[in-house]
Length: 373
Image (tube, helix red, strand yellow):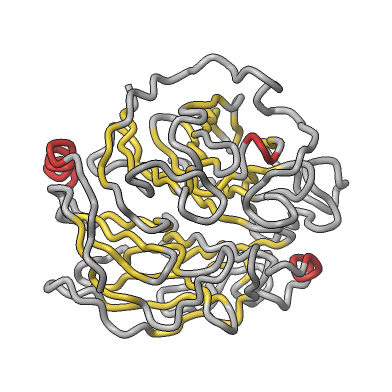
């Protein structure tokens, strides 16, 4: 394993630890211009900020395209790097490798992507990962031992279409205890409408990778008609929001309902007719290219890649969202992942400037702590 060269904000993480013991056609770059649809940020100037997102502090630097982050009960975290390595970020800010996942193909947008911790951890000492191989995308489960070692991967879901782009990759356990898996169309748009394919879908499976019994199609598929989903987040009412890369016109935030068809490739954005479910929020791709999503402080937060900003979207109840507000625009480059900080009171945000589309600064890629006040 290569040596780590991360720098840290040890004071910040130690405090957090104490509290936490309880795209465009080419892919996710989103460079193509397009139209907008309400509710959205006004073209040009973003709306006035609604919540004070304070000055970010650096948690760690020197990471290699961090993608998934999973907080551990002791205040540390596991971080996936796209080249296949999993790093432990200690509560004092130090980083160390815990192992390299076998079989990862990091070509294009693929690689080691989303991470999730078993809801019963450490009694069920497993970390789940979404990864690209030379044949497919798949979800695996690995034991993570008390000694910090990483066990052999056990394949739970395989056969998810893969390509140089549109691999999806976010995984998360929902409030119902099932594992949700966000996939892309693997560069083959027609797969999104094929309910027998796992591409262009949101999947819902149990801890062993078996379809949830009440899924709508007697398969792992929960919803379909997606182009490339990379963000999953639930509000306090149990509503699931998913972020999705558009092609030429509109990126989306969707409210996910079992069995719903979100339109791709027949429709991009709203207005496809009763057969399709319209998005709640849209952006032009160069304003967003939305990847990770999180709920905190009464808002849905979305990390923008090509948009190089952190979007705040107020939660209005009953699955409704307010007007998007932009933060950190252009300050840290491409933003890949956002999640609540350990102990609450803020967010962790990971950059993605080493992914081949960014303009890396010294110390990239990094994880930031963004306080919410």
